[in-house]
Amino acid sequence: MALLKISEPGKRQSAINTKPAVGIDLGTTNSLISSGYRGNIEVLADTSGQFLLPSVVRYGKGVRPIVGWMAKEAAIGDPQNTVSSIKRLLGRGTSEVENMPQFEQYTFDASRDEGAPAIITEAGVKDPIQVSADILSELLSRAHDYIGEDIEGAVITVPAYFNDAQRQQTKEAANLIGLPVLRLLNEPTAAAIAYGLDSKEEGNVIVYDLGGGTFDVSLLCLKKGVFEVLATGGDTALGGDDFDYILSNWIAKQVYSDENPILEERGRLIAYANSVKHHLSLHESADLEFNNWRGSLNRKEFLEMCEPLVKKTINTCRRVLRDASLSVEQIDNIVMVGGSTRMPIVRQALESYFGRAPLAAIDPDKVVAMGAGIQAEVLAGNKSDNDFLLLDVNPLSLGIETMGELVEKIIPRNTTIPVAKAQEFTTFKDGQTSMIIHVVQGERELVSDCRSLARFELGGIPKMVAGAAKIRVTFQVDADGLLSVVAQELSTLKMSEIQVKPSFGLDAKAIEEMLRSSHQNAELDMELRAIKEAQIEGRQLIDAINSAREIDGDLLDELGHNHLDNLMHELSENISNGTIEEIREATERLNRVSSDFAASRMDLHIGHALKGEAIDNIDR
Ligand code: ADP
Ligand code: MG
Image (cartoon, rainbow, N blue to C red; front, side, top):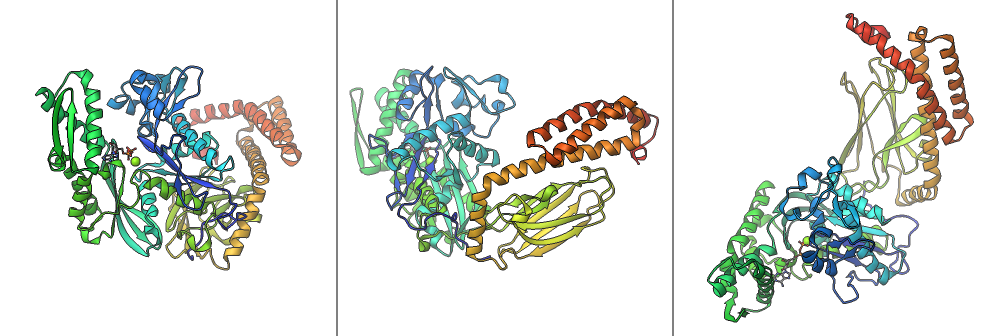
């Protein structure tokens, strides 16, 4: 498969008059939003010129949630109703987070023990999806002020180590406010894109992200415009806060000859230490003044204090390289992310370890949001041809035909390749011994509207009742775009296989045409699919009852048979002529009535089994 451009059809390909998209860095401490609406990618500020939005939400009774700086200030006075660091709770269970020290101020809703951790606030119970949605909504309002209401969608960044549940919940947060997610993008990849590293043919990139409370390092490998995460490492409890803490202890020792001042001074001391730290990022030394004490501190002294922290981060880099079996000489670029990389001591440590200067031209607070914004523009189709980010992707969904001539997609379009995905299927009829695997390509719901790629047969399936056999179908697309489909029956391990080149005879125009028709027909297709599925379910129920009656018909009296006959007739009629609701209702009625019959069959067969007869022998 050639390198294909990622763009939706039917959208303008020039940078003028397009539907804008946004990039979002949804951070643990701070969040940002960017847009390429006016040509260059810009991070959007609030009305007072602030780019960072603290990821903090305060929930009050009867008022709209307050997000950002005002909420952050309220956290001290109203900790129970002010939610921070919610990103750490995404994708986790209540029991997992209840004992995390940074969340001890919250009351979790115990009745949702199995589900997501939900925090009880004055404004009701708030789970991580809701809180994230409120942060997204605040960011989006910045975009609306800047662009207007019409936004195509967003690229949202997530840490490289986020698992499926965490990624899924990030998407759900966006869904909750009706914001289409064009793609989730790994934070380190976004940072590398912001520096244009994706335009290189290949290379290894270290992304070093030292924020307020967390440290992440990722090793990315670039091949033909696609970043692959080779290894990640980090510390979820190491960040700028620790530098503040060490410096505040030192100041306390000077002021009180004691590292542990009275509690009330703690907060003020830490805030003061933080301002000194920021000052030392710009100046060689700082004059200090705290509670009538005067002194000074230079960079070298600060470095000595904080050296253990910096060393720890370098050790993590070393481990990440070792995990990927790479040496420092094989690293082509070092990208710095996070406010704490502004400290010269961090830059120096990186430079001396890697033997080259880290990239520092872009504000480390904005770099992830910038990369997300660039990717969003590309995905929304707002870049001119030569600005395209080239990614090796599967341009159209690949799937197989299932009952009712419906398409089950196995590898969705725009999945980066190489990729392998498997799904299990089953037989439709009792005693079915073979299966035709029909491989199709396209976005439509019906097989007849898609492109047929290949057909092959899997035989030798042992006779079983409908729905009992398990057939695993694996789709694999290699780096050259060659598709292999393997179907395997899981009890006998019998398998059958075919290979096709899905791009054969398909040019960019044909792809675009297929995408356009799927967009135009999306709603109709969904309805068609739903009705087909209801019909299949109904037919399956009729088949199942018929074969059960052949075996155990004498368990029913005449009245019972008549009753079933009537309902089955009614269902058949609806399958042929009824609406989807009518089919569903008729299926439901037949299901209810036949369940007594099923129960007495069960009793009978358990009785047989207890007498030493295998159920298999009874059924056949
Ligand atoms: P997160 O990724 O956790 O959301 P950020 O990337 O916003 O966090 O980083 C916040 C941290 O960066 C804070 O500890 C802050 O003190 C620190 N920081 C910001 N600017 C500077 C600076 N000029 N010098 C030193 N530290 C800084
Ligand atoms: Mg960050």
